[in-house]
Image 1 (cartoon, one colour):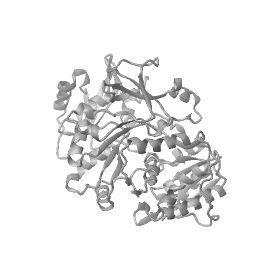
Image 2 (tube, one colour):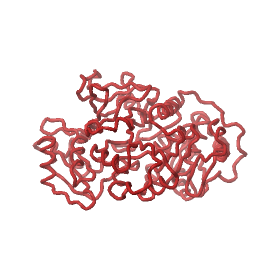
Image 3 (cartoon, helix red, strand yellow):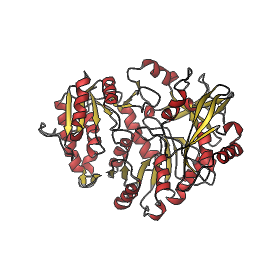
Length: 502
């Protein structure tokens, strides 16, 4: 890659005590290209990887793309059975693991017929031992823009994971979106705490294109997260709403030197407008929302930092406007545009949209019906073009014939001074069909008065929105990628139901 030659002496990656220059990364990349090619990786060949966060998490991806192969990341928190399922569906030929995970990898290798090779990375990183010489040229270019590069599996919160087939075209469009619309700093110092084998890795190439540095952490630990921002002068971060809530509730970010921060991109789910306003007050005016899906290579809409400069909590509930190159419609069940201000499903069309789901033709046809990506997200749009997501289709609660959007109830709950975070689901009920049920986490030092909280929601939003049941919990369950896992919350209530609409 030419980008690695443009900034040879600058730091490309920092991971603990490892500080790798662009020249060092280029050498490692050439060695991994040779190692994968030696194992038969070429056009259309599948490579899967299981590793903690480290520079090689991205280097193996890049080597796979340069050879024309397709890359699939495996989540470290998933089980051997889950990894077998993904590797089988991906028809992977090579599995790459780090040395501590070698035995885990061998269990997967023994069960997946398509797997031919297990490649082991030293625990401390660096090239695999006993490999062929590095290749001279990294720009091999056997793939076209339409060949699949990233075969990324969804989190599986609604059932069996689906393999999203993203071509090289989508990956390039994602880079354009970062550079054009995501307000990336001129010289990025990007903190990656989430897995680089997954969505967090999308920000690496945009950072390297500008000669920036990617600082890698092994997951999110709030105090250390702030320490690293201070010590490494981080200026851009990808975060989840739950991460930001944790910083606010467990740390005192306003007492730390976060002056280097220019942007915190938050994504993956709605953020409470009240908590967002609090975050801007205590951390700074650095927040930018990105809405997208794996199926759109993370491209969708953006609510810029300037758009956050408002006293309107309603405005802070918006996910913004479409990014450059992305068209968005709000449609009804028949595929017709809904009137302005009414709720419809978000449909997207861009060069970032997937080819489809691997081995799932019916699901692909439904998702891409009419040439548009049907996202499953329900939203409305105002006269200024701002889009407001109200719910996932599958999360909408139908109680007594009324459509109730869980995210709207959650926003009211988290506006109450005793509530730090909340999740709302529908629970089957013989009279109402479903009843609104809320799980709430108290703010530190606060106790939740359940009847008072129910009355508060009734007063602010109306009686049909007031949760008939409120469960106070210490924490909310999360998926391996950090989203609130509503499937786990629903499971006990829907286990004996004959009509599990979710």
